[in-house]
Amino acid sequence: MFQSFSKRCFSSLAMLCTFFPAVAQTDEPTVEMKLWPKTPPGIITAEGPERDTSGPKGRMVQGRPVIRLGDVSEPMLTVYSPPAEKNTGAAVVVCPGGGYQILAYDLEGTEVCEWLNSIGVTGVLLKYRVPRPKRPKPAKGQRQAPPLGPLMDAQRALSLVRANAKEWNINPERIGVLGFSAGGNLAARLSTNYTKRTYDAIDDADEVRCRPDFSVLIYPAYFYRPQDELLSPDLPVDEKTPPSFLVMSWDDGVGPENILRMGIALKRNKVPAEVHLYPAGGHGYGLRPSEHEVTTWPARCAAWMKANGWLEK
Image (tube, helix red, strand yellow):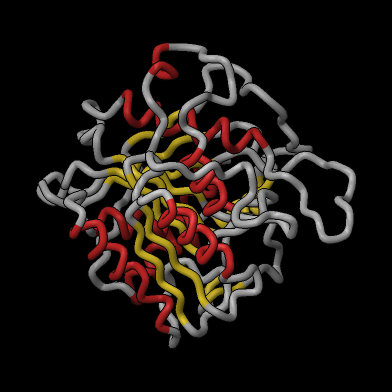
């Protein structure tokens, strides 16, 4: 099943190179690893085999389809390493979005890892559990709490990357997280819930810290509820929250308030942050370029990473 998705992903990546000539295509991932040695802790909600749920009339972004990976019951890490001569030692765990229902696996996953490789960064694609558990519909003006399973997967993933840093040619002090939409929510939760694991440790990898060294949040979602003064309680920003880079457009239906509120919370806790709010571009563009300036965010992000020393060899 995974191999069939890989072939489609790499086909999409080849098309991406037409738009981003600087991105060098990688033929195969370096490592594919199950997150958990046995059944993952927490809830598994998949009702069938893992599959692309797009169908013949699936979503298109910039004239190209999007892989909408559903029914994920076996979380995985897929490591994409840059060429040795370009490797800076930095790594980023990539969390695709999809409302915690599916994963936009190529648009916000494999294509992003290819871009990271082009700037000398190891891309680690996190395939976390979806869909979210079915619960009673929340009251009007409320929202369903983010599921716990994906956070377990993200905490485990960060620790596994750090535990395998030497083998994968990664600097354990330069491991960040990057997420889109619901994946941006997951990345933010990982960046603010690092003092205590959401599951009992199962092996030595879980003794390795799971705090990212930096965080990139692209059109993130679910940062606040109507009754919150600033952020939802599941995002406990403090002075040790990682430095962050945030991007959104003013016309994003999810709400630019997400990055504005997060920016204020980071400022109050004296956490360095760079916040980009663009006039137009909507939601769910990944890094496929369009006429909107918001899709230049990869260049801005690379400059931010370089300025902070994460891209130094």
